[in-house]
Image (cartoon, rainbow, N blue to C red):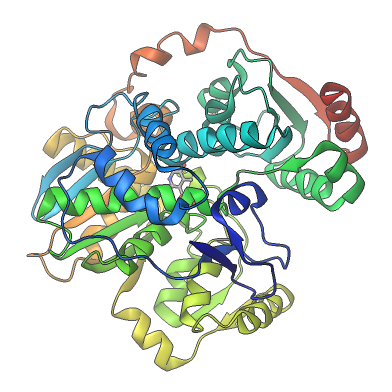
Length: 458
Ligand SMILES: *Cc1c(COP(=O)(O)O)cnc(C)c1O
């Protein structure tokens, strides 16, 4: 497999280069040159399906026997033997629980694998990198758990001081590992993101530190997520039997993996995008116009996003893979804060895609009713997936799978507010609130933070 950029002007690369590169040199995102088709049947076993589905994407970069070992090793740390259990909610609705990894969010499914692929590839090249990332919560802890104790990685995660939840902070700051460095920035999440961007823009710093990223635009993360869409279909009736998915969406990475599964041959009837008040994507699927608004904080903070970076990958497909058109459109979007697709294209899109938005009160009611009716505890993100799936479900004979992206104990305040129940952390995190924390407070100043990183890396 070779990979091309969505902007059409970067070098064509193999998997291992795409893995380490992240963003393409022309500013685009890497996508496979062709969509490989998977076979017509599978057993519903996670590891078997993972190896079969991902092999065409990683070959010939990673030897087959090594890849099989890495995959088996990755998912051995998940707390549930089915890795991603599928729960029947009745009336054609199912819940796919993606939160049984170490940090209780779906991001573990991909990042645990990506961390091990990094370790393998950096070891093979005898190369060291410095990974820097900004987080508003979930990504930071998932990335830290994925890269802790690795010899070839120094990792710096910036979070806004006092502005992440206590559980989210502690999941990052209690990791006792020499290569992990948490920095609490005196500022907002946007300040953290600007600092990271500033470091990447400083060519000298970037080269000296060998900067790298494992943020949500990394192709390997999208690839790893394709697997559970296929596994869900296998468990429900087979890869050729129709199935729909509803996905609580922020950066569009998770739901794009569902699209990729459909391109691989899965019989996907509907892809439903669930939004909170930050509903840029839902408005786009309704109107064909994408327009930027202010970000509003909600009880589902991992979806408090305006510009969904992975949307570029869908746009590339909608524009018949013409990179120059994608480039033109996204540059215009930056300048004018608004873009539209043609009415024909919008109509075409509506056959497969839909979106629905829910405000915090609706989310709270859903969590409360679900706990009462079925005993299932949903976190606010997962509740949006369930609500959107129910609202957009066109054909009740086709199963609708809502993706549960976080464990209820990751957002205990919202869950307790809705149900009166304080969800318990799983046993591996039972003493989280008592563990010692390690982090360093830094001002919102690029040079100061860069100097701190330089000192540690040296
Ligand atoms: C990251 C995250 C999302 C959003 O996923 P995207 O791939 O960015 O669309 C949804 N829910 C939870 C709990 C998350 O951590």
